[in-house]
Image (cartoon, rainbow, N blue to C red):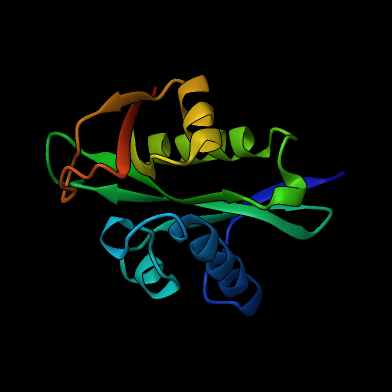
Length: 156
């Protein structure tokens, strides 16, 4: 079962399908104002380093890092569009992907990762806390939202 993780341009047909699938799953239980996932166009516009994880050449999932405030004393990376397709879950792929995203962030001189996730994303919250993320207040442009939880991890 060869596994690869690499940055890929998100506007290919198979990745657009993946992002649409993710959007449909993650948006369903929330009102529109509580959905913060990026579209493919926004991933490109915001220069998100979008990583694809493949198993035997098939897309198993994705995740990206947006580097923010690089020209300040407090830069951070924000995890974006983390997802592993249901048929690939339970194999440790999400942890492998987070490890790669942490390394990418550190390679760019940034030592803090943050993320927003929905309150109903129990598996994701369990994953994030298991790899060292701790809950924080809203950050950046996020406002308090009863449907969101915010996390941070210091790396490096």
